[in-house]
Image (cartoon, rainbow, N blue to C red):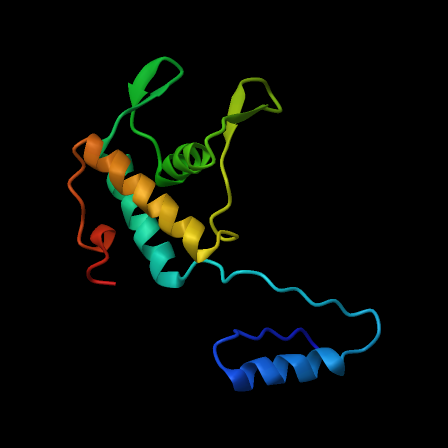
Length: 136
């Protein structure tokens, strides 16, 4: 038996999942977890990160500079968890550790998008259509 994923959206799907569990080989495991972020959320998030990276300066090594969309994501995901995690780089320096968005639930991703919109609005970011959820 290969990996099976059941999105619990109807009684029939739930019955199929229960049947698969009842007939799974010994040693298999079953995992129930919230749905992870949607592709539309992911697309919107990266549009937002791009808008912010193009329009907002961040303090990096004591200087105001533009950062990449990936670095904006790292900064905002760290803020979302309300913690700062840093690691020593392999050749010195510090590395800010963010959170992986691919593992976020729909709710967590919604919270990150809301945080990013609030941060961007505070900084006067002019949003692209996809950052507002239009044109997706």
